[in-house]
Figure 1 (cartoon, rainbow, N blue to C red):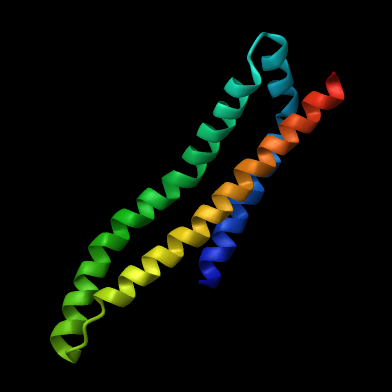
Figure 2 (figure 1 turned 90 degrees about the vertical axis):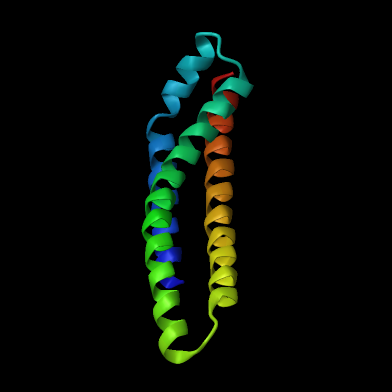
Length: 119
């Protein structure tokens, strides 16, 4: 769980610094005629891609390894761990999703505040 929190915090920090560094580009898009909705959609897509790629890679490896681990544990220890694994996955997605949501909303706020300063 600690590793998850550290990784999600690092992803969020990286995305926020990228947004802060490129906030002038979002202003330029607005000056070129892009609406607020389009800019927010662009931010959302960037954040989804940035958070989804590590999740997909980890999911593929985890799906394979969890299947093997469940077979070994259930065979040798006679313990059914599928419920605990499901609960852990839900908790993982909840924590990761909240970091994603907080990052997206923060990036959106950064760009919105910059828009208000330019007007």
